[in-house]
Length: 249
Ligand SMILES: *Cc1c(COP(=O)(O)O)cnc(C)c1O
Image (cartoon, rainbow, N blue to C red; front, side, top):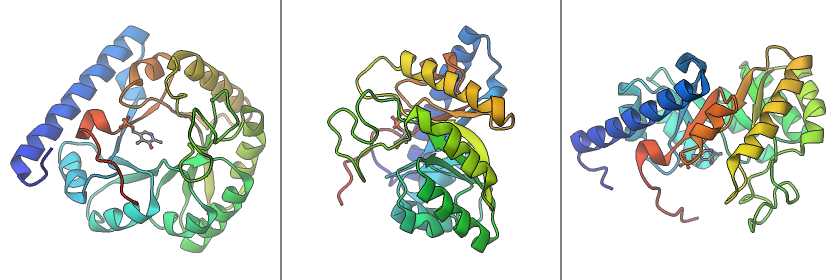
């Protein structure tokens, strides 16, 4: 995939956007849902700021990133665009302050220490961060899914039983607003049971927090199942932008 020829790249991305929008429309029709219930987030990790600009030109202004080191300069380069930035990756507490400077929504809040770090950072920055509780739907212990080591590489997420307490903490924290829940389907398994479980957790959460309506679920490979299970926010990278090269750390 070349990024060198802007016209060609624009056409490639336009094709990806059209294909994903068609999949979303078909999945909504199949599920009896309205397309305007769905927010499509373009996950632009590993792709340049010029791609974010092309996406915005195609009407896609919700942008997702998973690493602060990459997201921060990209957000700065695109500061003139009317974008909403979603932080979707594992977040270390020492990065909370940086992320609070540009992110609008943090999808990956999975522990109390992170709630307080984000709250302090948002208050200092004079910003409001919408936070989602990331739920681990893996059979294995949270953060140790299917052969992935815990820590940076693991996908994180709180155990379902921890969600109500974390949600209350977010709702009560200065500078933060509880948006709802997020999950990544377990690797290599049918996503439907996981997304069904997430829908139940989201419904329970709305019992105490009626405004926390976001259900962030569904990626390139499983957005249909996510829509069938009530997802409101899709995080799509590959299907919009093409394959990612391996990240060299
Ligand atoms: C990379 C990523 C996505 C997008 O994945 P694709 O399969 O490329 O659509 C979604 N969510 C999270 C948390 C990610 O890290």
